[in-house]
Length: 133
Length: 281
Image (cartoon, rainbow over all chains, first blue to last red; front, top):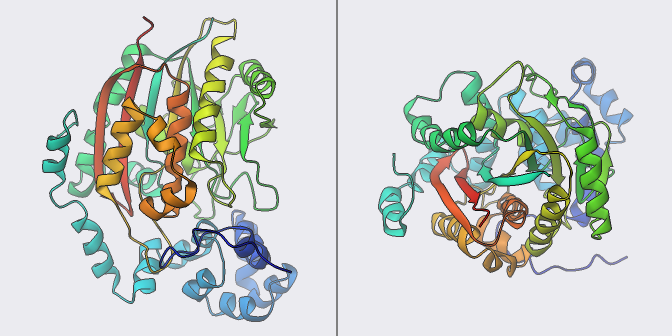
């Protein structure tokens, strides 16, 4: 079986959530989706291993879920929006995950983001018509 | 007959809702972002649209990855917000307009946009946060809403050109409805951001500003980009910017630019507000 190649696959440091990724990670994303329901979150907390079994999350995915290795789950194909349902209530923000992808601290990651706003007012004025504040 | 008074765009990131709920909108980090909504809010107060059609993507509340419609239209009397996994208190339900929704669905399908019709549809932060940013938070919302969900999560997602054409079909659908309704189309999401991978944290201010200006004056420019080209520039999650083209396609070719606002960063994104008015010449 061959997965069709795409011209976005050479974008550096980027994993486009397409059929190939969604197919392999379907059970783990289904488990993550179930966390929209508080009763399911509580059931998971009572017995995480049994909950993984119930959703067909096995092998390396199960190990990553049980270790709450959010970065590993992302790398293995979990969708970022679905992962957020598990990671954020457990104290790992999307920015924490981004920082760990780059091997920097969250503070360094946030500082880098803040630097994107450098010179913004000048850019807006140069283009014209923007609300400046 | 129903008529479109204009279009508005807004970011829809979760942090916007949190900032509103926690009363942080005048804190230094948030102040400029939220203050830039005031002219958009004033425009909405002036024109008082009866119905807002909100173009957004679901992030795993109403739709799971088992069935992913490319385009899905709410066709119900009400739309509930719900827990997305973060145990936040849902906002009040949104009132819909089922007969208008079904009219739109019929007219879209006639024009070969085979939209998924939804008689129950939970709306997540992608829908809720733009409404809160533009109207404030209410127990009874001041505008009737119709959700129009676009898949930007599980590829293949529709092209920029397809979204623009959907907007044009949406205009025909709206303007052929017999009730005298004033309609605003709200395009949400974007602008540049990437949440995952080693390239996480990407924001491209220059491309974002070019998108805002071109969507206002020359939307065909963005429709010539492939999704791969857009993601290369704006990040994987920046692909949401294609939803602005649904809004733009629903408007007249020449529109009056009422307001342009851009702020970066907000959370991980470049965030833009654009208010375009139909001139009815």
